[in-house]
Structure formats: structure tokens, C-alpha cells
Length: 206
Ligand code: ADP
Ligand code: 5GP
Image (cartoon, rainbow, N blue to C red; front, side, top):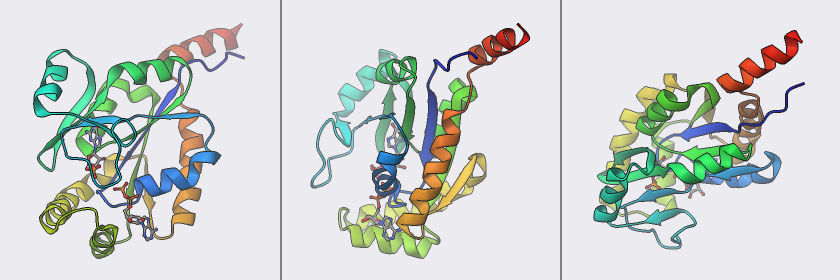
């Protein structure tokens, strides 16, 4: 049997306020060793957010320097700010055989698919309805009214991409959504890269 050496990617998308962070936290001790990709962004930190934990918070100038230097696996503008995934830590985690989890938007998902389709699994996470999303964004009390309105408008666009994902997780109760997320994370680990597949076939044939 060929050992699995390359890691795998699990992309999570869904409107801001869908419950992605909540679900990852609820399931984190049941999905084995993983690396959560910390994105870089030009948006301002929310109260309680810490540089290097939720995001690397940088200026537009610094972000644009990184784009020029080719440091991003993918990046996009979301709600008027830049968000991007740095290539280096992702490469290192994949080389170490880890499951790499991304919380990125639908544009980022398309870019990761284009570059690393063979090892990518994706799930779209959403509350049951737009109304419930709006309620959760207000209850979270981390964003101004203007920002909430912008996120709701963006969510109406994002939901149209739900069919591009392997799985949809409806976040009605955290418990049930976390249970489904654990199944998806386990399935994601089983994806083989093209190289692994070739090596497996060669070894299998003997
Ligand atoms: P995201 O990471 O997708 O932006 P969060 O995990 O921050 O979303 O969740 C948004 C808000 O909704 C938070 O205040 C969170 O506590 C709440 N929330 C998450 N899941 C549920 C749920 N199943 N039922 C009720 N509230 C929820
Ligand atoms: P928030 O501001 O609520 O943290 O995130 C806003 C949106 O940006 C979410 O949809 C989130 O998935 C997305 N996002 C976060 N990091 C990245 C990233 O590195 N790349 C892309 N393309 N989207 C990201």
C-alpha cells in the first residue's frame, strides 16, 4: 500500500455570519490534525480579533506588494477589502500531509479549484434562510449597520454559487452542522493527488 504523503484541501465558503468559525471550533477536536489557513486582509480588525490569529491585518500597500511578489495562492476583493491566502504556509502544511482548511469566498474557491482541483473538497455553509443570516449578523454585534447591509447584499450573490461546491451544510443547529462538517472533513482527507494516484496504480499493478 502506498502511504498518503500529500495533504488535502478543504475549502469552506458561505456568507459572512454563516457560522463557519463556530462550526470549525465546535468540530476541531474531532477532525484529526489540520492546518487552518490564516488569510491576510486589508479590513480593520473587529473587536477581539488578533493579528496572526483570525487574520494578518495589513495595509493596502503591503497587500499590493505581496501580490506583485507572487506570494498569494489566491486573493480577491470582498466587501471592498482585499483578502488573500499566502502560498508558503499552505505548501508546507500540504507537504507535511495535513488537511488544510480554507475559509474563503466563492472567487477564492474558483481560483483554488483551478490550481489544485485534484486535492480539493469544498463545502458551502449557510444558515437556513437569508432572514436568519441577517438576524445572526445583528446578534453577533461586531459590524456597523452599513457593513451588515453590504454583507447581506453580498450574500444574495454568493448563494448563487452554492452549486459549485461538493457539499452544502445548512447551519440550523451548531451540533448538526458540526456533525456534517466532520463527515466532510474525513472525506476530504481521502482525496488523492494526481501523483499519489499514479504511484498507487503502479504499486497496485505490482
Ligand atoms: P462566520 O465565521 O461564517 O462569519 P460566525 O461563526 O462568526 O460566522 O457566526 C456568526 C454568528 O452566528 C455568531 O454570533 C455565532 O455565534 C452565531 N451562530 C453560528 N451558528 C449558529 C447557529 N446554528 N444558531 C444560532 N447562532 C449561530
Ligand atoms: P470576514 O470579513 O467576515 O472575516 O470575511 C469576509 C469574506 O472574506 C468571507 O466570505 C470569507 O470567506 C472571505 N475570505 C476570508 N479570507 C479570504 C481569503 O484569503 N481569500 C478569499 N478569496 N476570501 C477570503
